Picture 1 (cartoon, rainbow, N blue to C red):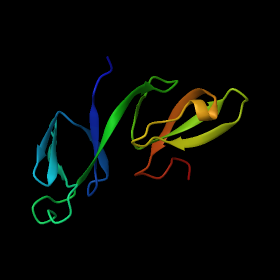
Picture 2: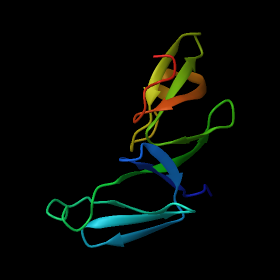
Picture 3: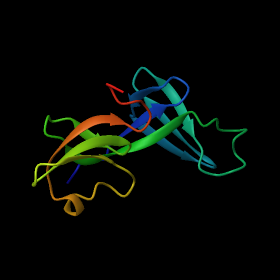
Length: 119
């Protein structure tokens, strides 16, 4: 059985924090992290006055890249195909379609919230 884990992107602070607990509330989700405090995400329109949208929750896929780095939703990975070409791919709520690109390895190169290093 794979671990069910989340991380949260703090929108105003522009950093990730690990999530310890998630509370599902009317109109929003509250996530708490170690030595962080709490962040809010709302999924229902009309609740913005009660829950500031300050975080984006991203789930662990259960996969690791070739360097042992955990792959989460929101990550950008460089996929190396069995034919030798490489292509960047984003991991979304639908996962990463490994079959469609015949990949032999993946490497996390960034995430959708930050600019890629070297750009």
